[in-house]
Length: 468
Image 1 (cartoon, rainbow, N blue to C red):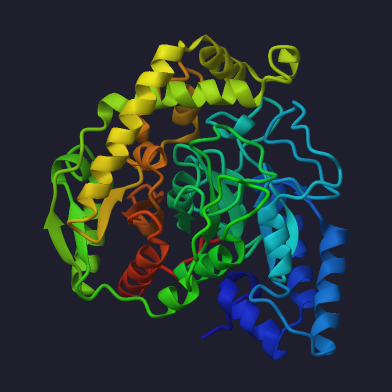
Image 2 (image 1 turned 90 degrees about the vertical axis):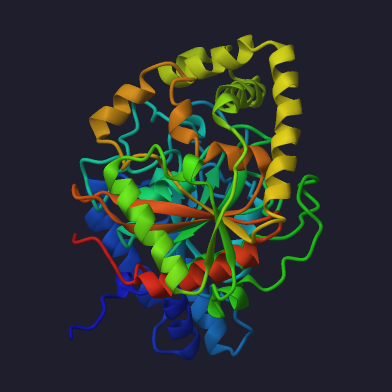
């Protein structure tokens, strides 16, 4: 058997090898940067590559190890951060050409915590304009390394592509309506959307303050747990961050089990409206859960179809607030699709926002009560396999509210703030990766990570890589 290529190793394995002296951070970082140089012209995953800075960080990491200093759990491992996150010495473009208002010295808490854990920041991952659906006309969209003709996911597409293509061992994404989960599913990755408030949003340019979640994406559940453990926790710079113990998510992932776990499935919600490839993959995923020890329980999920457009309108209204300093005064710096979104948000009546706010509390309460009956919920990420690039371009060129049905499995859990772990569940006959979610109770990240690790071991998804 041929040795595993360095870029195909899991983050946890690379971190262990650097800590044990079998690899150096300089060696790993140089390999990562060489791979970026070779593949980035094809895949457009990065908004900015920090080649010189990353090599300096890697050399410093190796020097600390040589001095016998205490090493963080991500010591010397190259990762990427979404270009919504401020980082000293880099521009923060948020996928656009507007000013995000960050000073050159600003660094997001999530970036600072990755660095404190020892990670090397290889670069800033590309995203859609303003973190919604369409890329700025001047930004080439990231290309799916598994199926180049298929969608690579929503705003965290660059984060998904750089990890899937072996140009980083993990990445930070953000999720407002599905933007960790869509690119994780599209790129055969694991992605964690934590409970709202579990990860600080300080220094992260907002799309929608009350919907935005920040979380990790990687190729295995353990890798995601390592990243999450590094970035989670209360932050005095973000008063909305939750001041509750994070626990030990890494231990949860290492000891993964589904024995006796009750997984709720509402067939009329989660299974009834899927295309054939997604339905087949979802059936197989549920079989893996059951074979690993889970009990699949019939449940009745609240009706959510009618709340999707009101939720999107509320999101757009909050986006208009986030961009008030530059839109419409600098309208010429925005792409047409994002400008239309902001106009929609600016025109939203206060009564519509208030009505949604009331329904939001009701939905959160209903989901909370449902998760008192079962341990987790299982739902797809999308009702259909990833669209072709041309098909998705047609969707994003339409009305900003037109994509609501596509978000029926993602947006509800941004509304409620529940944690969600996206897991791969095979590929369609056309070669597009497919994914599903395990939804946990509030603060239930350990629950979804433990269950996800058991599923991953049973399904054998962690070792698969695209042929590049």
